[in-house]
Length: 510
Image (cartoon, rainbow, N blue to C red):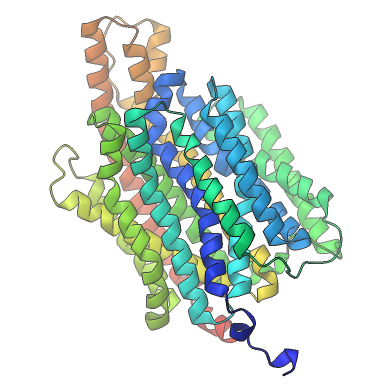
């Protein structure tokens, strides 16, 4: 039998075991994201973190990953996905230990930076390996659906595990839980992943990597600082300008280089553009909504972290089902209709949640949460199918890093924009009790977490009045945020419908 006659299926009999290995590698990255959302109120009080510090603790991880994913994906192409993946798992485990025992917000932010380095090594390798392992379109759709299911299941377990840990241990335990996960995942990947793999010849273009990292981080920080009002406009303009110059130089290098880090022709595929937009907006909205709900449940409704995790089970459990369902639905009805309709329904679920009283959730709140989780998960899996189905296997690593960048950029910007928007509405809505000093009044109006911190410094009566005012203001803020997210995702469904108009023709070319 000649080599050319060997089919993908015959050549890779362990492909489903390989899928299990990379899904296990992806699990701790997801756990880290969702565990932290539930832990925010506890962590804020324990470290005395300001609202700005809390936002940095949460989103330095996805924002830094957004700058690192493409360089790490191309590095994996040069030295092998297996080696980079295993290194990333070790780095992630060490960083989790450092985060768990961080004595102050600054040290926790530094540990989250190291977590981002580990996560950026893991994510593009996972998607690249899936694309290379599954050539058959229906098998690849199912594999991506199962990958999405594990991601959503990790997100479902995260708040529950985090809540249970916070009931009995200190806040650092939500990071420390990653260590035993690593002790299982790293050996599994070591033994299951093939030791011999095709790599791209040539040196890794470190100069291009530095340009991209500096550009991405500067632009994202400029956007963050501009919306947050944390820096003067001149500083914001300088940082944004520097970042844009770096990205322009990076783009010119890609067009002129014989060995570009990123194949810019990927952006000529409308389906890839649609998939990236879906990933950014949907993950941004989902991250912002989860963070908002976690604070509403604990600060306003007085639920424990574990109770908050249980309350959010419908959104996560339904999301776990959405991945495999999306794989089947796209085969039957086509990617265009599944992607756009799932986003439209999720917008309706968000609008429904915006006008529900969480003090009396009844049946409709869990139903809306489940519909939201299911449809957003279907939409995100559809974005994976659109991106990975538009490229040949040799470009799977690059396409995977673009998709992963979209997820992390969406999460980071979603949390930042939601946080800034939330702070702005909260500050304008809260009615502060009389007698507060100007300094305390400014702090109390920043966020509901800051209101609680200020209340600890007051006598019983004014403290109770301040907390009551904070709860009322946050409930209003939460309704405005969910309504805005609904409008954003509803608009996205229309954009995606038009961008995916030619997807079937594109897919038939492969």
